[in-house]
Image 1 (cartoon, rainbow, N blue to C red):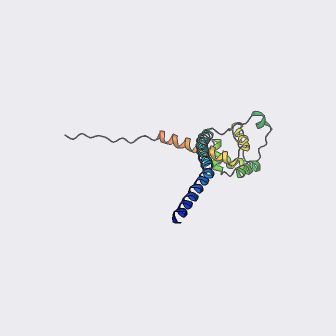
Image 2: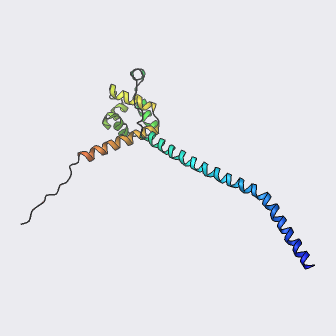
Image 3: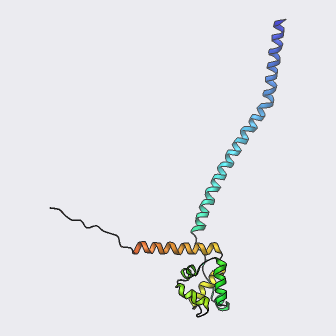
Length: 167
């Protein structure tokens, strides 16, 4: 009986393996196709991330629009209170406003105290600032600071050492 028992066990084992293979073969093919699809999606996402990063760099390089039309300048009002509230709304100091307008801090103080009113070219800056948000103003300030730092590095004379000849 030992032989029959061994034959039956081996036959059951063979049939079980065959049934498992029938079930698992299509599943293995599905797994392979899903792995391939995931791989393709990863490649696509990586390509899209590169494009997005490139576009983000291009957007960050683009200059912030800092213009105002003559009509807007003409119809806008300029009171000391409005200038002060604009500056506070944008979260900038008098010095930063002066930097943006290309004037002195004293001029901004006099605008806000009501002693003087802004000239036409400075009105243009104030109207343009009204259109911008805090982020754009910060970006403009950073650009102005970078330009100023660049000018300073160009204007500083290089130190040259004298060569003395020893005989």
